[in-house]
Length: 330
View 1: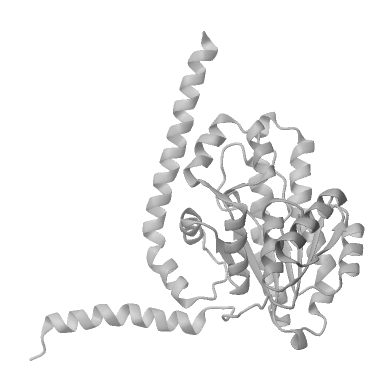
View 2: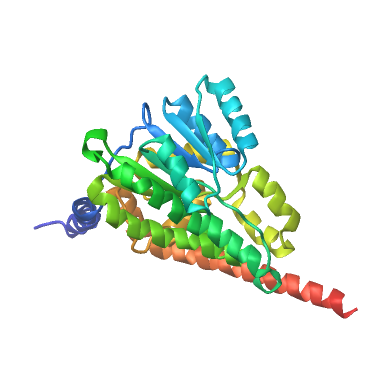
């Protein structure tokens, strides 16, 4: 007579193994490796912060690097810094990503791109009621429309003779504020959330050309932009955003480049980012059947954790509002 405990144990093992095997069969796009060495890596916002760190990293791995930013002086400083650190000369292009014609000119001068990293970004924190529409438009134009301009300018040459050149990548630098809305980030979050829709649809459009899209979600990062941002941050924004901690630009660059090379669609940069990625996986592409399994199994638990975070944030808002209401009534 069969042991019922053994049969129960076999069933417990069979179910996850069956799910794993099924996920192995269905995950799309399929796994891929994106080489960096001896390939053309083009980085926007490459004169400082994460973009500069990415340029350093790519150059040190043997890539031919081009960087684009608005300020020629900052680009020249970045070029000198990269040369001193790596011995590699990078190409520099001064253009505003909001100007499609200027961007197109820079891309044509740079030559066909293998890895495009759309990294530019601006952030002016403020409650929507208090923020001018000119600042809202500025963020949307740079963060979202600028991404459209860059990709549209680079895509024709990226597709050209792709089968002879190997797999390519388009990486978009979003933010954890592009996964969850935060007080004071109304316009910024909208511009970064938009990148996700762009990335998901674009991946379907370019997969047949062996071009693979990555969406990177860094937390607060120690950059010159963060210093300026902190000067204007509403107090509540600082309280809530502090729950995720900050990273160094070099750390983000290493995580980002690793994700790009593995062809990952979602690239989190820290543990909180990983939890957010699982919580917001939805209908996004997933190449790893193991990560897909984690998403399937952990979604309920992560949702519980997410609700705890939301409780903490709203509790902070309630406390801050009561405290400031008392002071304003005096």
